[in-house]
Length: 314
Image (cartoon, rainbow, N blue to C red):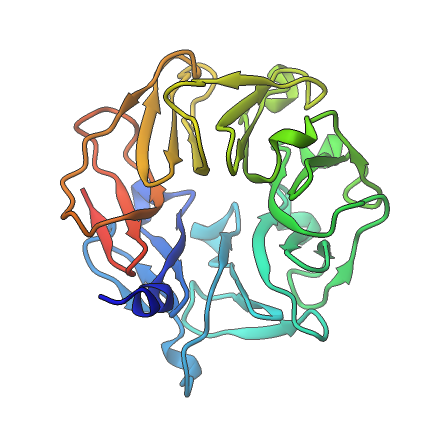
């Protein structure tokens, strides 16, 4: 497989339904489009089939409503716009973000989406966009965001009350405590940036914990809402962190998984120690995305996306 072909099918992200145990639904965002599985990753179908596209639609981000099993609302980031489906990906509408079309790097949905209809989109060129009408229309939301190259977003599980969200950028991390109306840069060391990934504790209201994965310097954790940061696994996690997955029961279950380069690393003690997850891949298999819907036990399957576009359940 040539490098060009690999890039055409590169898997950016794997996302599983909030009710995966009940519906076995997951999505894979690829340079060649969006795939959907309703059998836990055993088989995949084209989620854009109803659009009758004449060419591939690169998809770099995907996010689901917290009430996905009930409402079926699904969002995907494509060049210059956001696609919205209200029926689990059977049909789609498109909202454009402007010209020239920005690259959508991440999507975040309000935990109270059912009532407030709020979403955020990160772009690599034009900062953050916000929608308050279930992705029908979008507006730039960048006051105080000094770096508009946004790699990732993280939204507080208590967003309804604290209106807190984070933006990872080429130069550091920014935080908003008023729903994105204004941003302030955090004291994340600039020599450790760019920041590629963010993950926020399900119990953030109590433990104030957030994780940041960098391009060159591994994984960092903050216990005070991002005021101070400490490195984790400096030896085991040196290099790029391309994915962070926390246990849904965190911090009661302090397990987390990261994609370091193309290696899957697991910690069962909140990042204090790490072990590599053994993967049965061919020498050409390079992991670009990972999800752990069955948990972090060594015998639990993982969903893997490879740079060549392959989707595996191992």
